[in-house]
Amino acid sequence: MNTEQVLQRLEPIRNTQVREVEHNPRTRVLVEPQRVAFRPGSGGHLMEMTPGGVMSMTKLIGLNEAVVQKLRPNTFGDVATQLLGHRRKYSLVVKDGAITSVVRNGEFHTVNPERLMRTIDQAIPQAEFHRVLILDDLVASLEVIGERRQPVISGDLIQAGANITFSPIGTINPMVQSYALRLICTNGMTDNTILREFAYGGGGGGEGDDVWQWFRRSVRDAYGSLDRLVARYREMVNEQIAPEHRAHILAAMLREAKITGNEAEAVRALAIENPPENRYEMLNLITQAASHMIERPQAVRRAQLTAAEYTQADVDHTECPLCHNRN
Image 1: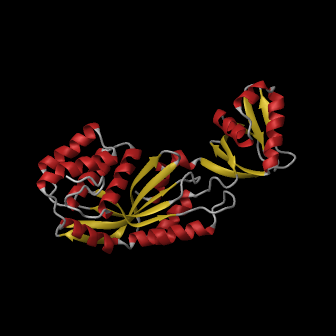
Image 2: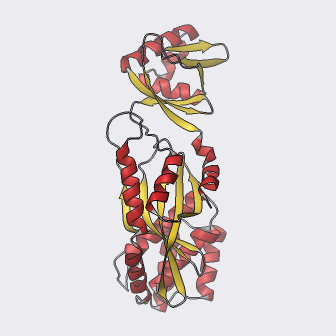
Image 3: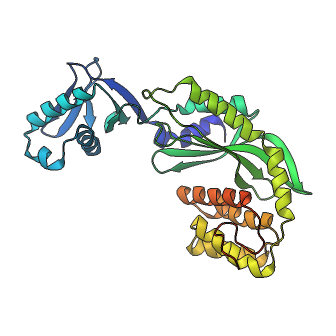
């Protein structure tokens, strides 16, 4: 996928924005017969509030449901306006022109997807996007690859990249991880060789240059970790799994990744057809599921994180590296 296609995939979450408000005497909460609306005092347009937006506002200003029910509409508007004024600054979460949430100033932070695409291009030469996942809470996970390739063993090339998880309005702290695409089967492998999380500081909902410097540096480092990924995967090829331990370790990985039902049966069928003789082959059973079997984005992400943890886990040939139970 190219940048334009990625932005199209991000469309469901791109149209949500965070707007910082500085309360002034002209700011008003207006209660009309069929709606509640908000008028910024800075000359902005009147914006309708969704039921969730109204609920979040009452929570922010400390009005419980019982009190709200007793207030007349105009009184509620006046009280809400006055209590918001006591906070002086706060932020509006706006989707399709309507306010869906009112939160304390600095709770959410804007990450512009278009600027993020440009930052990735600066960090990874000839970047291509392998997959885009839209997760819960307005979160996206991007699997990006570049030109660098290296074999784990003869005939098994992997392509370097990065896994970037972010929210356009900052519902989570951005995260960057190492990533490789196994070309023989197009399994995407998320790895914790590089694992960075950006912690937002104080201030309002603005972007700030520091987050973009962090993105650029972290994506570049993740892309540059290919040598270490290959070295680790080669170690895993030599970490044999005894036949009597394979089913136990696979069951633990499926349980940790919460892979169940038909998807779990499909993974077990693969293991029966081609028994995983070493940890690298066991890893690829889970990455195969995450890349080609599981459809729910949240479940894919869970499987990716399980695979990343398994790769970094200490080796004990009598112990499951995820659940730490001995056979």
